[in-house]
Length: 446
Image 1 (cartoon, one colour):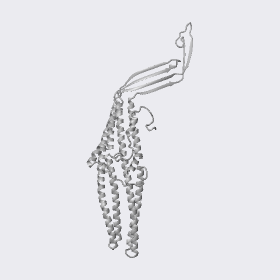
Image 2 (tube, rainbow, N blue to C red; image 1 turned 135 degrees about the horizontal axis):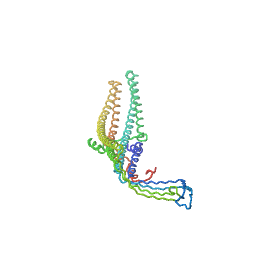
Image 3 (cartoon, rainbow, N blue to C red; image 1 turned 30 degrees about the horizontal axis):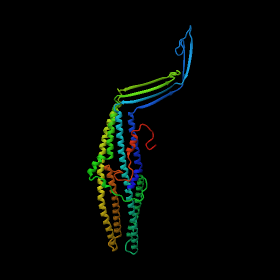
Image 4 (cartoon, helix red, strand yellow; image 1 turned 60 degrees about the vertical axis):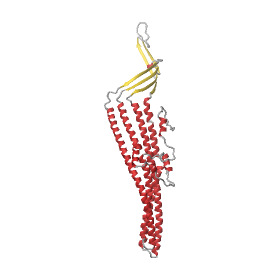
């Protein structure tokens, strides 16, 4: 079981895509913190300009004419004007939207990590269930196969006794009918096993080989059901994720309301013009630092509507958190009950198997002296088979229920069940990108 779950932990597509989603969510931190940093932009212009001047009584450039009469003169300049510019903008205040945006991004990252933890639980639980289903269906298939062998021998013996006149044709027909039913049950068990193998491959990533018996993880559970409920309400990832969603929704209200506050920015710019306005050789340099204040007076009601909408979404998130707590509590109670039931059923089925074995042996001995019929033997054989199948199913149910209960409590993880794998740490990628100012490559080089 441990090696199978370790393989699923490393390579399960659902778990890996969720990890990628958390890494993508990490990038919202540098996106939000970017609002604290200045924005810098550069501009450049280059082109062709044709300037023509004509007039009477004056030369281009403002020189005076001497003498009498009037003179008309025309000048033409063909230049290549160019402009280089640099602009820097820094926001000083915008209604605390920068601060609240970073806090919201952090809440979303923490929520994504809890979603990842919940996905890890689901994958490990599905892996344990798939593992035990293969074990169960393999054991049932073996039981069905052995039952066919026993019934074939029973049919052979019944025919031999019919040939010497000890039993009737009815006994032979009953034995043949039981054998045919056993073969049909075998084919059904075979199909069930193939289905379980397919599910195992889907979760674990490979087909099962030789699977060893697995143990329950009851030792990792809290001592009582009430303790389990208390732990789940405080630690279950779906509950914690819902609480982070509430925080993010509350911050969204502040972000929208911040749009109604004034925005104060500082804008600095420099520009260098060559052949300014088409005059050859004319250079103009311009530099400025300006404070810019923008006060929203009326937005048509759009921001107000989004603020009201954000408040309703906050209420929805709070109710969703309450709903998630109740769902987790119900799951803990249900799975705890299933685990207790499975343990009790195992004891009953073990007793039933022992009794059925004794009964079958007794019926066979009585049949040898003519006190029992062939039908009695077949019924006893079927009773024993059913008891063994029920015991195998109960043993599977106990292990599966223990994993389900541990997941319901919120403590089913690779670390808690001591899997031999390198633990995935979402904080590694977070620390790699949270303070990045630039760069298109991801930390893994893509």
